[in-house]
Image 1 (cartoon, helix red, strand yellow):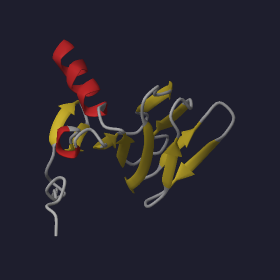
Image 2 (image 1 turned 180 degrees about the vertical axis):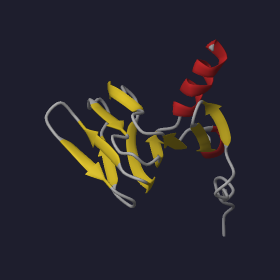
Image 3 (image 1 turned 60 degrees about the vertical axis):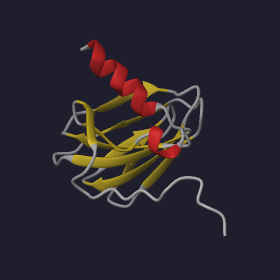
Image 4 (image 1 turned 135 degrees about the horizontal axis):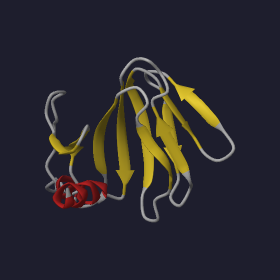
Length: 125
């Protein structure tokens, strides 16, 4: 039996590294050899990411608490706990909390590197 490429990584609910604001890195690019990044984002009411796109990454968003509005230029959906949105690479999209309760989302970006983007933003602040 061959050795695993990388060791198994377990992240407890309260674990993670705060990158900037309410964005916490749960699984870093370094931990996955740049295969993916997993971020936990807490969105107070009225907060979110405006329309944008990623040239490199695709994103998978999973609602962990509250509700999150996601969409593109033509459509929008309200996701509840357990709801998932897939944003393909180079596809314009947004997500935001339009609701009175705080929303928590888990974003998996493939390939990794999105954590480094937020680390760089934090360094400039």
